[in-house]
Image 1 (cartoon, helix red, strand yellow):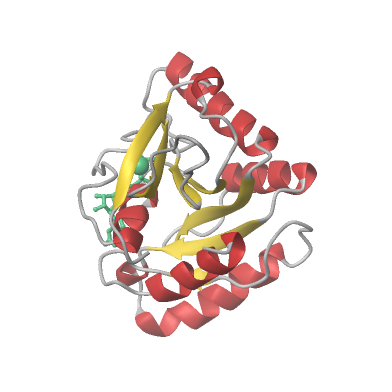
Image 2: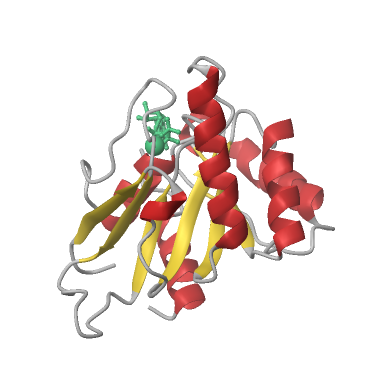
Length: 205
Ligand code: GTP
Ligand code: MG
């Protein structure tokens, strides 16, 4: 994560996906959980992925890669981070919500180079019904995933260890879940090194 990262592509529907090449890790979660903020915090670039107070900010699959690879003649980046539209945002027009959900679900199910999905859960809310649906889909498709708690600065610090163990217990029987839970705050820079290390180990970057 030492070098600058750049945005390479926004994917509004599956036919615009880049050809499968570099290993990918994707960030999924309910609208407003902090996916785009976490990507920015990980790569140390505030404005890279667009963030917003209003849910429904990210509307495409956005691809980010380390700078300095032409993409031609096999000069491919070693990995890509994929920011995703959030799910569970009821205020947007139904057609749009359906289209985003389909894009997210189809991508998660069908991408051979998708190495792991980080499923973000808001520390204040815990795992909700639509999160469970995504976990079910990942288990069924045998796509490896890991739970990342976000916005831990919004809860009491003393409550974090218990939240971690309760969340770990909830996913214990899920076959594709990585057992360790990572607690983060993009705002306070918490848990970022741990997350960088697990991503690096996962893709061999
Ligand atoms: P969508 O793209 O709409 O699905 O949202 P998202 O999951 O990408 O969330 P985003 O990163 O845009 O953040 C949503 C809001 O939460 C913004 O107002 C962020 O500033 C805020 N936020 C994100 N991470 C943190 C955090 O660690 N702590 C606090 N306090 N706020 C955060
Ligand atoms: Mg976003």
